[in-house]
Image (cartoon, rainbow over all chains, first blue to last red; front, side, top):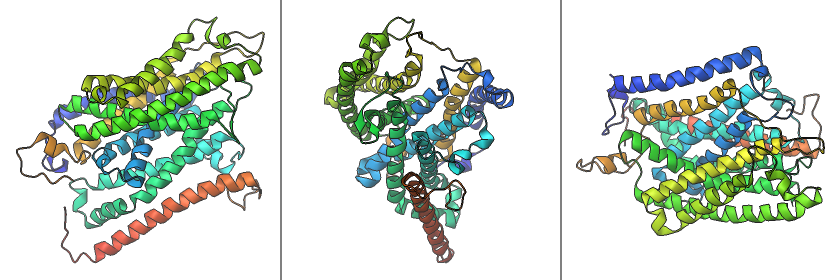
Length: 419
Length: 53
């Protein structure tokens, strides 16, 4: 039925089967959209946010998808600026994941602002003393960069590429992609950093507050570093899931090993910096603000030392070591374990820096304030996951996303032209 | 957002924030304008035979 749109030389599942799968995932999207309509119609009273939790599940989801979407900017930086040519085999997919993550982040923000029709105020009436303004500027511009990076892949669709103008446009965009990738890296550095900076400058919240360099708290640099470190883990994880679902090998082991190795070294160096930051915070910053270290991890039903251990050791040190040590990196099970732990680790870090910050009592008369999201918050947070699955399914079916797919799956065919 | 808006002030904060914003938007706009014009030019000089690879 749609065979004319499917890339040449590859096989895809039948259209009815594909449609059925999309319908199942579409039902989840519909559930999320019902929640969105409720929130836009009735207001933020549909959430469990309150005076303690102005930032809640959505902001965690925002920070988490932006962190794991960092694989796009970092892979782009390596491919186009540092000329790591091997990554050409995964860059299209990294960009697609980036587009999904950043469009999801913007969508979640459009729900979270409560008055989406006034979203443009952040540009027109910009508060030029706020890190969040910088985040909004960079996020919007970087999403534009990702769309620009994705356009050539769309134009390489079998039918679109027959149109001469589109064919030339895709070719010419590839030619100047380094400029866009460099701009994307510049924007990513600042918005990833500023998301960390927002937490780090809150001197009224000693759990988050950090000293730093000039106007930038250490969390600014740690957030950028962690996104570059763990983002590729997410790219590798989604690639692995896509391979499992399609039953095909889509990216060569050589490319996967290289990206895993780079990610491993980034994670290891990041986690060393994170450990130093945590020790300094626990021994200098916390006592100086009149608190004890144990205050932040006790006397409540959820946040204990376990979360610190899980974030730094289990989901930081362990994946870092597994990925830098060649035998464990090249063992597919251990590599999968490492990238799963890595993705959990960065999401846990964002959870801690958003939600544990809000939960910790800071006044002598205060108590821990725990929070359980409403179903509307949960549905709108799951919505981007379902949307992402649909996006990947459509892209995989109709676009030449993986340049190695033919040679890795149909070796009998004489067409081994690469890209 | 623009110097002609009533909220605008010629200070360092506005220069950094909006300088950065317009710098990024300028690069993206100029880059896309260049590739669109070049592609239109290439298409017109295609002499009808599209070459795909």
